[in-house]
Structures are given as C-alpha cells and as structure tokens.
Amino acid sequence: MKYSNLQQLFDEPIEKIQILDPGYSGHASDVWLVKTASQEVVVRSSRWRNEPDREFWWGCKFMFGIDPRHMIYMKENSKLLQTVSEIALPKILSWAEMDGREYLVVEKMKGHALSSFKNQSHELLYQFGVWLAKVHLNTSSFYGNLAKTKVGKREEFHNKLAQAMKGIAEREYPSDSHIRTSLDPILEQLHDLPHPQHFCPILVDMDPSQFLAEAGKITAIVDTEAYVIAPREFDFIGLEYVLDEASSASFLNGYTTILGIPELSECRRAYRYFYRLLGVQGSVDLDKWFAQSELF
Image (cartoon, rainbow, N blue to C red; front, side, top):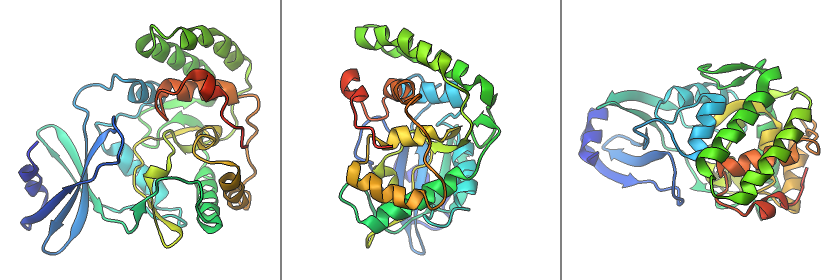
C-alpha cells in the first residue's frame, strides 16, 4: 500500500509519515507515526492478508480464536486494559476499512520502547507487577478471547491445547526430531494436569518491547494484539524468559501486593513446550529452552 493512501484516514493533509519498526522480523502489523498540522498519531494495520498459517498466529487462532487481520480484538483488549490505571494504553481515535484492510488510528504515547526488563529500576518493575496482577484480577469462566469469537469451556482447555501442540508440531516442525519426539511425553504430562482454575487476560508474546518507558516508569503498553483468555500461569511462563532473578524479585514485590503467584511446577514443562512451538522468543534449541531458569 502506498503511504499516500493513509490520507483517507485524515481530514487534514498529512505532513509526515514515519515507519515504526519494532526491530524484529515476523511482526504482524504495519505501524506508522503520522503527523498533520494539528496532531501526531499512530496508525496500525495488519500485515496479514490471508488466513494465518505460521506457528505463532496459526497457533493463537486455533487455540484462542484471535486473528491479526481483524481489529475487533485490539478494540476489545483496549476496553479492558483501559480500566487498569497503573499503565496507560493508547486511546483508539478511529477505525476504518480500505481495500479490504482494517486500520486503527490511536493516540501517540510518551516514552521509548523498552529493550529489556533486566537492569530496570525497582520502581518500574514493581509498577509492572502491580499492573499485571490487576489485569489478572479480571477472571473469566472460559478460555478464548475478549471479543468472544471463541469461548471454550475451561475443563476442555488442556484437550484443546494438546490438539494445538500436535497441529503446530506437524505443520511447522516436520523434520525437527527433538521437538517431534518430545511431543508424546509432553502430551502425557498435559493429560495428567488438573484443570487450570484462574483464567484471565494474558499476553502470549509478553516482552519488554510491547511497553514504553520514561523517567524510570512504564508509560504505556502499545502492542496488545496477542491478548487472549487463558490460565494466568501462561504470563509467568513467558516472564521467565524475559526476567532474571533480580528483576523478578522487584516484579514479585509489586504483584504479590494484589495476588499470590501461581504454582508452576506441575505445568511448567508442558506450557514451556507450547510456547516454544509458538516461537514466542524465536527458534531456541529445545534443551536450552527447557533449561531456562525457574524464577517463580
């Protein structure tokens, strides 16, 4: 799409357009910073044109029903996250569809993208912990997504997760013998796990790059495409790959003012396997992935 077509989203002439690149390949959205005479805003639109068919988005759609081509998910995620005051979220200013592609215009937020949660101040990590616990207070009686295009029974979650694991392993890793031979033992572990009890919004691709910070505080969360309804344990599984012992301690100091931490010992290996299949932190060797430090 030519940048000039973005003009249709605005009443005023566009003075400047800047591409906002998250700095990693495979991201789902095109994002532009757009300046007119009276405002500077961010425009988002999905890169996907066809049905998601790669490990992360295929798995998220199969498991939770979210589709990056449609902005209804970000709109519903925004409604909930706007209610949690500790970390701001860009307000949605307008929505449009052009040539079969959806666009969201959102406010520009202050701050710079976080490159890491490690070596951040105690105050920032404490704030992050309080915020995440308050997000987790929004419990649900189903798994799926906040737009409710998928509403699954909680007691069927692990059965569906097993199907997702099989599907991704077969589709994406047909020649990876280590991933394939690990599948059946993981499925046996999954079968023996008790039903999760605490379903709430979780961010499948939890990563510091989703957040902006300034003056030692997180100012905003700006990428919420992969928010789904799932066991809160999933967020803790993801966090073990982006925190270290020091940063997790500060994070927990904040989180535990609101909620206790979940028990991960029984589910950690199975849930970690699912996250590796999704490639949430790239194509990490499976043994190295399983050997990640246990922080919670």
